[in-house]
Image (cartoon, rainbow, N blue to C red):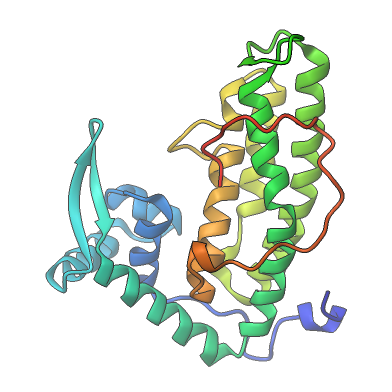
Length: 243
């Protein structure tokens, strides 16, 4: 990890991304987003975001889509390329490439733990060697999963804080993850892995996508993660839509 002084703000302060870039990036992170959702992602003026997305549509960077009863903007291939170009330009201009790369590698070392925890929340062994849908009737099993997610919260919170110190758009991931986990502990069990909401899975997946986009790394080109201790929430692999 970098020296503590590396975490301090530069004299110029943290980088605040241009609203046009944030509007484009919000669509990428959301997979699909309407004007309001894209604006809310970074607390932007909805009218500013609407105009930006209309401009992006005219340039062929976003297109309107409808899927499963949901309508919104999605990126085109050209929009993905343009977004990555702008993110790279921002990163290079601030001289933050090595800083973000180091945090990405820290994140990647724990990514499989989150995948496994989400899997174990969805399925569990039935005692005969088969996997069954987790009905959350085994308090000990669920408790181990929640303990693992709590440990992952202690990973994502400092990462988000460190990244947000330099790039404002990275702020909030830790609070969103732990907020979802708090809802789970209050009995709202779907907040581990529900889609299109700020569940633990969604927030972790979004940070992963944010780091990949910022560094211009394709999923098939990711480096192997550094060795980490195994997850504490069991060894079930199963299937999951986590990353």
